[in-house]
Image (cartoon, rainbow, N blue to C red; front, side, top):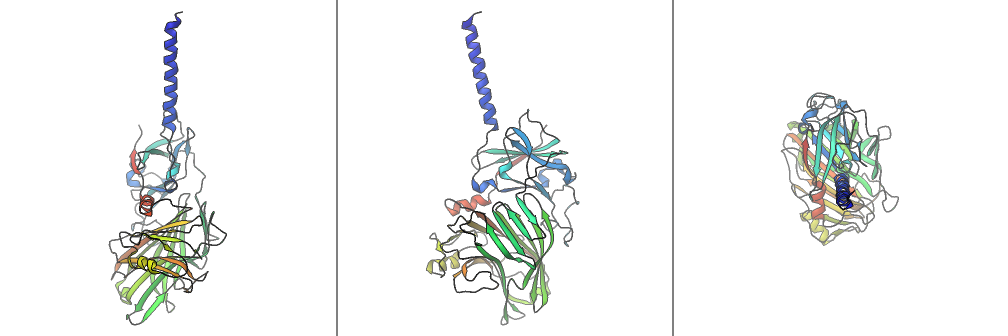
Length: 435
């Protein structure tokens, strides 16, 4: 045998094998996600998943490549009502579409980090592949997930865990125990890895300052007068949603009934408030103002920044100084409204505000850093700090809604002008139907 001929052939085959192996490894490798991106909830409208429309929700599962195997990943499909909120049987807003069937208005939810490398021909899976979902971040890195029909495989991972009996929500980052008589109030709010065993937050406070009939007869309605009672729960592995009936009581009479949906995700929560205001009831409220704010528990040393406030952070120390007065004067607007606070104790939080309808009102920052102020109801004394939003009025009638979104992390790094934008930005997405 001519070894001078076979040696180049062997070298060629070895090179081909090495290149093939390198290509295979490259095809299966994905860039790690940042802490901000990892637990983002990817939400896809049913209208973007045409292959799923008209089929029972229970027929579907979601899969991704993990360790070179195609495995089920946590997901859920939420049905929506005609008002654009999550649908509940016992609520008075009709479903958009048909119950238990995938419709255009329904939404597929999963967690960004669970998407994986692209599926290759050798990856087998139970069921029919309906759609390939491609997620591309700002650096051009891609991840993939696959919508599957008639698979027997399901993930048993639960990123959010809910107990209706205990009114308790738990994730790997936080746990909230709601007051059984009024879910506006918390009995406990704990953060995993927080600096000590205390609750970092006192309460999520909603206030309405208004005149009744006349602006001269001012009154304040607080968490005792605004009572939230759960009417239904959708508990899923990605997000748990509780439908609340929020009743505004005045002189022991129900002045207004409001829809409040609480959305709990692995490291965030949303208060989604919606109401259709009868003109007669609205006419009873003279010069109303709404406050929704998060009150801290002795968060001394916490640094605060806002979208429009000073670059020098406000520091929680039990008194409002000149710099904090600047935050109060110019902190947020309807379009620029992020609020960031770093407790320096392994907990940062960022809040955003959104109107959910065409009717909007002026918005400003509500802020108090006063150890001596008692703002009932309170579990812990003092406003250290109390920070959130002030809505300056209410529409004369019709639909009015807003949502406050609170994100939490052990630490957000860098410029808040940049990371607050990244928190809200989802990856680019394309959806195809595999042959």
